[in-house]
Length: 230
Image 1 (cartoon, rainbow, N blue to C red):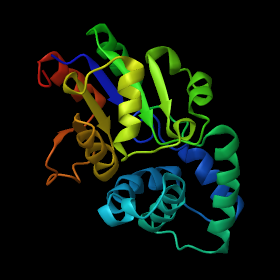
Image 2 (cartoon, one colour):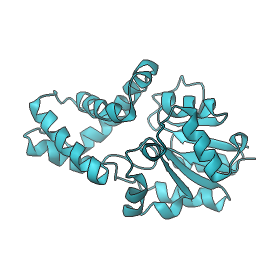
Image 3 (cartoon, rainbow, N blue to C red):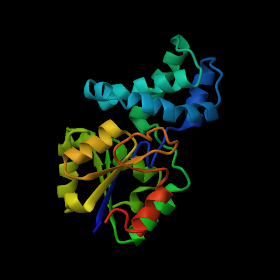
Image 4 (spheres, rainbow, N blue to C red):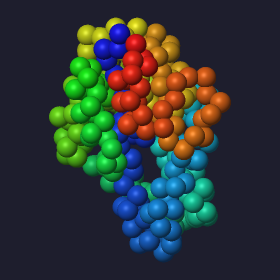
């Protein structure tokens, strides 16, 4: 029986503040809409989700490669102006965390999973600000434990981060699933820790993935209620 759900933060519960990104670019004379940037994000994430890339980079270095790829997929040519905007955004992220957009379906889904009797644990590659950040945006009360890789000194896909989370939650790998947005980080890492990985694939770009996929947290709730992970 399913007892515990691990969830990634970025790409599952939180997304970049597209309006802030658009404003930073506009201040440098780069004209692109927040909607165009948001639409480009899934394709950039799919391109980033590569075994070699994940294996030869850290979460911090991947983060700014990710934003370069987003701009590329949004049709924005990289330049000194885009670099200046990203420097400004990086400074904001270090102080406050740029991943501050919470889609409207997140809170109801977390509440529904909790109502189903499940323990909820956030397991995220982050920069040491995640707990404070989740307090700031009002998500902390929806989960039981927050695991920030920066605080633990190890990051996904290393199974040790999942093992730390399992121990802290008093959870068993065989009764826990982990929901994430990157196959090579989340699914591979969860499997290495003896858990079942579930890929959040909102745009259907991972149709060939050899794991469970859900298109939304609402679908995750439906499958949990139907016993799909028991």
